[in-house]
Image 1 (cartoon, helix red, strand yellow):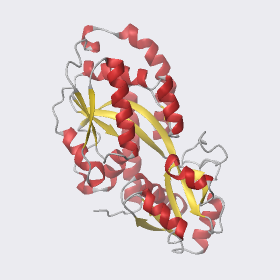
Image 2 (tube, helix red, strand yellow):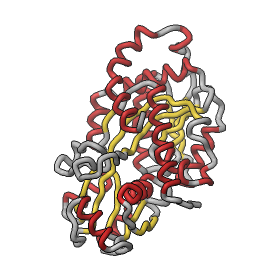
Image 3 (cartoon, helix red, strand yellow):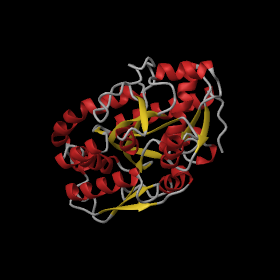
Length: 330
């Protein structure tokens, strides 16, 4: 099962899982007394970032749904590895959780210094939401489609510079995936975030970036940058006029930024099931659906097992890209 299949199955089965949840309850699976104290959701990035905002939304809504206290604990550093390592070593009692996004798998796949195992050290709890990135170009670059971009890169190898939010992140590896699939060469320039890369692209220092739709949408709307395609196999409702990678002539490239909750390996099944049921309720709340739409992501309810399939497929896919491109990132 590949990443997209896992995510599609997760979303498609979410409603039926919610319907079955009430029938499946038992003393061992509902963990009726949980939680009886505050649950900490570790966000491995600084306050104010998109992942932090998602963590705070989920903490608030889980608290309301479970009639309990959920608090966000920001532990930033090392592209998310510091907070992730912290949770990997935390007690597996359901009171320390990890809010993960794409760096959870991309950093583990590409940085030896990450020092955590996304498959062996964590228990999947539940997917929350996902959405694509968008390829964007300097308005003076003489291309308007991904096909034209690939053709220009083949014609003039090394001419184009691409800025990412940092080496080993999804913004970096989506470039390496494109290079691996097309055989083109584009120079990667890592930045400390998408915002400075965007400013340099507008100024002409670089020609290309990818970023989340909310991060780039204001610049797309005011004409400062031009979108070429979203990184997923289907279009985004937030950019309905921008083609998908399949429509852009690059089938098989399907990259989404995701948000999910993980727990330390060994967390009791009953607690995981209780949390999973609550997450599926949260992502169906009208106010959460509205918030997701504003953030250009879609709810992705489903079981812990389906999240596990997705995480494994995503991690192994990026490991393959790292190997294929012979990336050495420290």
